[in-house]
Image (cartoon, rainbow, N blue to C red; front, side, top):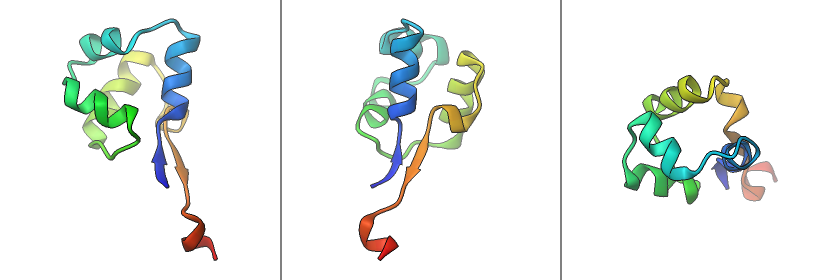
Length: 72
């Protein structure tokens, strides 16, 4: 699977922050937000902006989930 942003999505729900609010506060584009929602790769610059706005560490918003094939 690779990188998962489920932690970020859960944090947004817990903090009652919409994806639109996150986009506006960080200055990221709608395409980048779509990538986050689809667990696609984004730049570390995007991760840095999100961490700064939410005042969290990268590990609080992303998770590495190894592929089953890679672990066999």
